[in-house]
Amino acid sequence: MFNSAVRFLKWLCPGSDSTFSKTNEKHIYPCFVELINFVAELVVRPLLDQQPTSSDQKPKRLVRSYRKTDVKPDNAEGRRRIDMALKCDALNNNSSSDDDEYDEDSIQFSEERLKAKDGRKDERPNYSRIFAVVEVKPDTSAANIEKGLAQLVEYSKGVYWNQHNRRFIWGLVSGGSDVKACILGPNFLLASQFMDVTTAAGRLELIRFLVNWSFCELPKLGYDPTIRFNRVHKCFTIDMADSNEPMPTQTTYYLRKIVVFAERVFGRHTRCFIVGRQPPSLEAKSDNSGDILIKDAWPEVSGLAEDDMRDESKLLKRVSNGLAGHSEFNGLYPKYISGGRMQIQNTRGESVDDTTRTILGETVWAQLGDLPLRAHMRIAMSGVGEPLKTIQSIPELVVVIYD
Image (tube, rainbow, N blue to C red; front, side):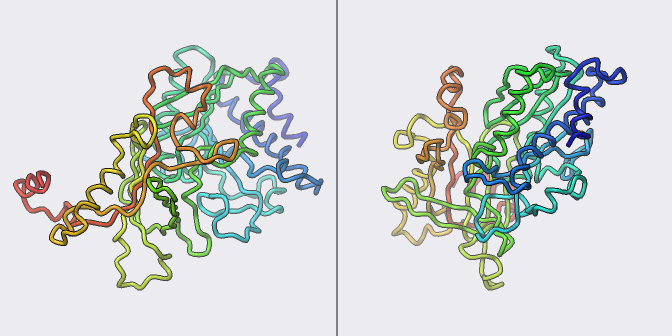
C-alpha cells in the first residue's frame, strides 16, 4: 500500500517531484489510477483482515480503475480512445442465489484475487463492464472542461449500447489537480463543483464519492436491478410488473434477443427485447421464443402516472381490451400483456416511480427549472404480423403505415 501511495502523492503534493507536471495529462493518468485503487484497497482491508463488521458497514462492491489508460475500449465503435475508466468488482463468488446483485458478465472475485495486486485479467476497459468514464485535461480552463464534458457524453453512448440495464451513467473530469464528478441521464448532464486534490478538503470530497460508490445501493450507481444475469441458465432476466393494476403482479422473463439498442446519447433510450417465459435451456427448440416483446424506454411524462394521457401502456391496454372479442384482427396489432411505469426503492425503502426526478432527488430537481420529467416505462406485448423487411414495394409500405 505504501508503494501505491508514493505513486500518487506527487499529484497531490505539487513540487514533491520535479519531473511531474500536473498540466501533463499522461503524468496524471497513473496517479489517478493509483489513488482510486488505493481507496478501494482501504475499503476492503477490514474484510481481508477478517475484522468484524456489521452488514451496513460492509461494502457491496469495489470501485476500481482499469490500469490501462488512453486506450480504445473493447466493444467500441470507431477509434476514439478514453483516458481512464472505472469498473465495479464484486466481493466474492460464494453466491447461493441466481438473482443476486447484477453483475454485467457474472464475474465474481474471490478473496485470493482481491489480494492479488496485478493478477486480474480484465485490465483493458470494456464497454460492457465500464461503470464510469474519466477524462483528464491539463487545466480548468472553460474550453478544456467543456471539451472533457463533451467527451463524457460521447463515450456514454458506448456504455448505453452495451449495458442494457443502465439507467444513468457516472463520470469524472479532471483539470490538472481539480476533479468534477458528473452524472449523465436521459436528458441531463450535471457536474459537481471542483474538488482540488492538493487540499485536504478536496481530497476528502473525492474520497467520499469513491467510497460511497462501494457502499451505496445498486440503483444509485445507475443500474436497473430488475435486469439481472442468471448464472445457472446463463442468460439475462427481466422483471415485469403491471403497475396499472391495484395489486401488481410480477413476472420474470428470460432474454432471447435484443432487437433495439439504446443508441442515442440523450432521449428516450428505447430498448426492445425478445423474451420467453422459460429459460432457453428448458424450452423446446421448436418453441417460438419470440412471441413476447418488451419495450423499455424513458419518455417524457406529465406528472403522476394516473394523470398521464401519453402513457403507452394504458393506450395499448385499451386497444387490446377493446379488440379482445374480435379474432379477425389477430395479428394486426400488438396485444398488451403487462407494463407501465417502473418503480424503484428510495433511501427509505419505499417504492416510488423511477423517474429523472427520483434519480436526482428533490433538492437538485427543484433547481433545474423547466427540465421535462422523464419516466422509466416498460411494456410487455405479444408479437404481431410479419417483419417490415418482408414488404415488397413502397405502396405496400404506405398501406401498412396507414393501417
